[in-house]
Length: 329
Image (tube, rainbow, N blue to C red):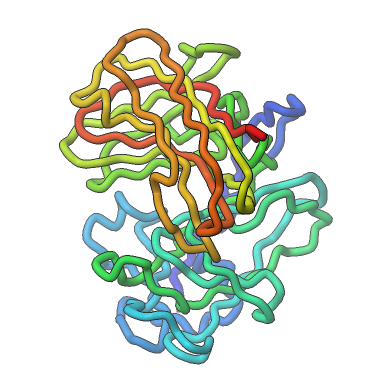
């Protein structure tokens, strides 16, 4: 059904925790699908997944110019049988080591099961598994087009572009790679390990940078445009009512159209749905020196999970370092 493309792309990476060279594995989504009969090429049907090669600027958007696309989801499905069939995936794993697994392309909610479809979670980020201890057995999971975006205006299809297996990233209080020192790719323009970049118009980037507040590395955010952007941590932590936390990050503004738009946010969710992106927030001031953005907040009964991100809008050139989330009580 599918044209043959390279399935495995090895790249030498360095795990900053151990200092040992390991291998980054990259698998195109269409090549690790088990039940390929539920995928059709370049046709959009409400009951099948699409192997999509004709998207505008596909070579710029998707690995190899191809992506797996779900039907559009306007409301949550009542059962897995609604919409497209469950999509089963089997990803080859190394013989040893501890790894995180990412499914690049997830930009709207998708249903994820790691137990063969017995239980499902609402997955909204590319990180689908972490701390997986490998023994050569394939990692298996399945996806379903079961969930709609919280906001009606953002509802539509979701995507699976490719899977990557990377050395497990150090995590402190739910923040992955908080000091930006972990390195998992030789691509100098890729976001730091454990972090992901988003902008409304697809522009800009966040990449490792050697002008750090402490240690050897920080992250440099460069964006040109009028719209908003977000630098998201892939981690998060389960919380309960009454807990207090302090979130913080060091920021150095090289130039910015709106310094006060640069904000550290704690994103609050419940049952895998975002309740409020700015559950707590700290804004930058108009200064070119290193400044510490910090916010202390108390968890209510409206959320059960928080994660950190840094946002802004308009032309931006900044450096960020040491992003922490710490219990305050």
